[in-house]
Length: 402
Image: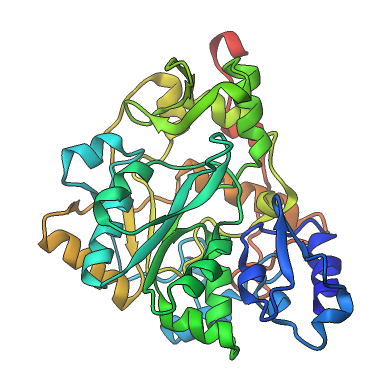
């Protein structure tokens, strides 16, 4: 009864990544999501699963199965010095060449530009990105984009957990020959690679039709309640009055901008939002061992290593992203984006003092010492030995918020 095992070893241990992959993997459509969590549909019980274990074999919550995916993708496993960044061919600084994309973006528009390039050079029919729920515009939801020009509407980061992968099954049933790409967080990328490694009908479909993954580095994601309370408690706006929310609006590194149905826009400094969001995390995100999964075709992070401090100081550093090329497909997309003038690139050192990575390493080190269930790391049996510091010390308060 694998769903009961999924409940026992993942859900009950607070290790669900809320990615939506189990819904895609289930061959009998027995799984649905109830807000953030998977559950069996009304017609099903634990006995309905029989001997099938596809949901458990796909789930990245406890075991992201990084080593197995690396063996399939790269023919080797990462070395200890590759612990946090994974295996990659090259790293470059980048930003969108189109002024409109650059201005609309959170960190230079490299993600939007690369997705547009991928749609053209890989002949993608659709890419999945983070959008907004039509009925609750303060809640994140997966958006399917069918033309490169429409990508600019989704060109900023979204700091909110939602089951991003769940829409894949619906789309591929509606469009059986769809060539699909998507942006994904590390846990979502791990789930897709696990599913592509399964010798199951849905494993075969995902192998054939999900042909491009662009991964966004993730320090830790935030529960929807984090956004909701930011709107109601910090911006002082009732949720029913929200028309839209943008997480990185304005001069880099941006502010949280909430637009009301009356057309008023209220902003919250990015650094203040980071501090607010830290109280709305779950165990899976806090104990996660991956800033990047290392399993995507391309990975992207902010070029500025400490956007929290830049927000506090109102320093407005140059806006760009760092792009890590991992696979032949990723190299092809980057080359196409450069050749067509969609993306500007230049040499720049890839720094491991990025605040998001420092916070991730620090929290992981803390949880590794507790002896409680946490997700497996990318190198089997390997642990970094250091003394963690309080996360609070990495994101200090300033001014009137002291």
